[in-house]
Length: 231
Image (cartoon, rainbow, N blue to C red; front, side, top):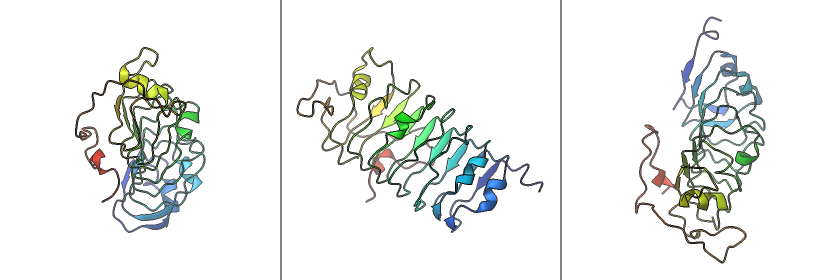
């Protein structure tokens, strides 16, 4: 149809959608932006990778039970929003080439290793992991993303340690060429400078964090990063 060949933006927020993402959506070959937040979607079919022109995908606040394991077909995707989805694990392979913003906050995620292990994921600018259930972070989460501008890992109550590249970035070490703004407080069990290797010895880190966390000016429709865990 003419619509499937011309529609570039589709907003389906608050539409009471249930079950899998409607199959007809993947027929919209020219789609560049897809929003379907605050529904009851439970599955995202692997055929979503047919949307090869998609640049923005927002699936916030859906009780997602599964995601495609390989998102490699979404080669033009720049922004991915999966906040408050109940997501327990990440796909084996994330969309890479052009992904700049990845929002995963307020999910029961324990492991985010695929953020580091996905080949080609080098354009990442903003990464939000606040309000999850992380116990550790993979080495390279900063150093493998040379363009990273903002990393938020606050409100992870089980986070005991962080990789050395995070602490080096906070201290501005030349070893890690990063100017990323790293929001890591509050985290009740994470001590400054503690790595997995040296959990009992805190490295001296100059804390420049404000007493209260700022809002992100880049996210007009985002909740405060202080949301952390739902109250």
